[in-house]
Image (tube, rainbow, N blue to C red; front, side, top):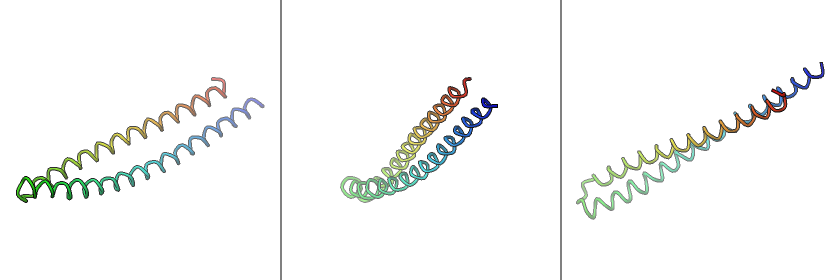
Length: 110
């Protein structure tokens, strides 16, 4: 009876940690998307419009091709950085999950 109660308590602790990790992941994903949106806007505004416009005026005769090319590069770079951040977030969530499961297994004696 006592062993069952201890097992139930450790199970509740694991569920509490899992819920906490899920909330942390949800908060991190919002922060990630907000950071992506802001950095994307700054990159397109600064690099694409300002630098691309300057390149157009000085070397391409104002055709707009320089700005368009830099904006396309900035878009690819921004999505690459978003992908890298998502992979990093996924690895962190997986590590936290594995840590919680290992702790549960250690406490339950499995």
